[in-house]
Image (cartoon, rainbow, N blue to C red):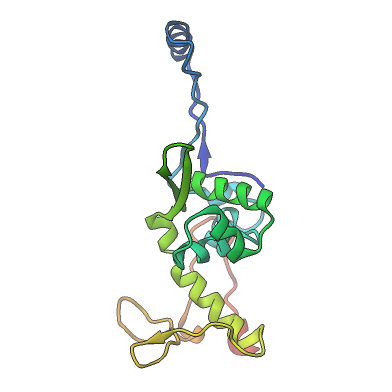
Length: 197
């Protein structure tokens, strides 16, 4: 999987020389190869139609990523808790956690110094996936399971979310949505497939 959110800064000859001198003066500290997190993915660099869904799936589109986010939202911050809640193989979970930290969805926090131990917490980017998980839960309750294994309560009643327009506050129906493509060559012939079935 490509990682377009990772940006490794290019090194000029001057910076390479300066790094070399720094490494020689303090050989105990190795040169850091840590990537920095880019703010956004350019969707035109991805295969197929440029789309924010495709860009989001580059970050959280594998089998385990959203389950990891779910577990951290449930308050499970330690590796063993996340492994138990997701059922993910430990090697795959370790790889997923690394990618989610690199992409800015999670952050690692040290909770013990000796031996060093870390746990995982959601960033603002990670917390904003709450609505995605809620939509997937509702879809799964309706289409994927016989009986929902988890229910949500809002005050004194069962919670069911609804998509509303932030500008006017009205419920959104698929027939009211019109697509406008901002990337040349990828115009959309609008057909309301949801309404037509």
